[in-house]
Length: 611
Image 1: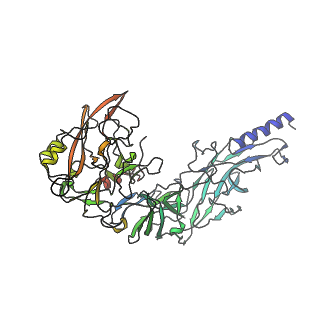
Image 2: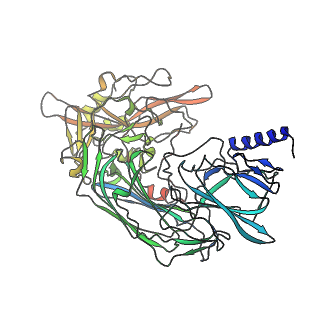
Image 3: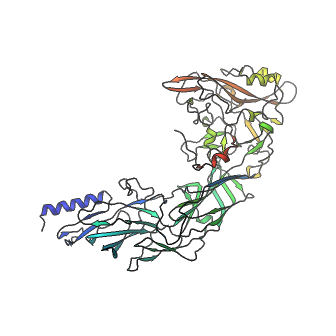
């Protein structure tokens, strides 16, 4: 019999293992377990803890032949007059585990934090198979929930262990001598095992964490309106072509036998849930053990979104139906993504042909997708819509060696860009001495442009423009849709509001106070992408758009606009080269190279936002 001091030491060791969230084993001669019962000298106590669920990219041994590869990624932009959409098949399934048991001390088997914790009410079962001279015999199984596991008593020896869960509160069947277990259909079956390496259970057994992998293929259908910058109030969503097959698993070997037939999980709008509480992202999952290609169709109709002025925009006449093939691979994630975006307004011809955003860019701090366009294209002096050249944050000067195109940060990544100088060709006054003066950079941005009067006298009205007191607008050749209001609404016209701009900055501040002077209500001004950023040249000429309405003494109002050059300079702030720049709006256009960029294997629609 051991001494009392040794008895206490054993119990303190067990308590320490429990606190660390590990699987631990203790053994002693006629020691007592936590229930006060004596533990025979040939047995030990087993304490189990779950680290979580891996990223779902592991496979298990199976009876059928598999390619072992995920579905190849594909992405395309589908355009219409109502709304556009990026449609993709990839393996980037987002997590939607809202409430989970996630102690900071839990780690996966490789020492890293588990990708997804197991829910605190989720059931799982541990199966133990004792190795008797190379033959594994079922010994015991116990069902647990994370964080409430009690020690279990087992004979000392060499064991294979298997853990199984349906990632819900369902009870898991006990094992038997056959080792075969019929798994449920369309459940997120989780599996973990010691594999070919047994564990030796005795008082010297090292702690072990259990990290689950998915056993079936998880297929996610995501419908989002991140590119419309609005939550979904309602929509009719229909998915067809899905097939969920169950399987039978041999717990001792891990071999799977897929059922001959499967079911069709219901996937309509009632089956979609908000992702991370964001009503702009709806997601639904189904699970299958089958690896046969499935031809899926996703249809979205009757879409209604909530606008930033608390009104609702309805796309009742717009229907989007897309078909994609997915070849499931067991243990892996697959996603069918329909990312709905605002459609563009097409205007111009030749080099000036462009697909314009319906409103200016602005930044909404703290939002999941902070770069967005105003829903109603208002005249506004919102400080979050005034950017210095090359800056991705409003009212902040950009670093010359880290300039960013803020338009590229609108969801989906890279679909929009800042226009080139050539793309202004159809929204400025015809080429003249005034236009030449602007292009040569002879304007004065220290105050209101002293040469604007000269340009006004020499240049004609911008063709096809309709001037007003606080804006000028053009009629698009494509993109008008009644879902955005009447044909003459501010977002069905290519309207440039006179939001003004802030003159050259005399000092460098972290966050600049916006002072528009008398430019608000008089001028529109927005950047182009024409620049010499990255050049060692100190003076950097950057072209921008400047327009206004002229109210002559005789005749009607006219709209004149110029491609003007700002003479920027770069100063040194410590070791950072900072662009000294005016503040003005950004009006984005579609990037014609997006299809090529999005074809890259590592492309992800969610933008990566700079610090």
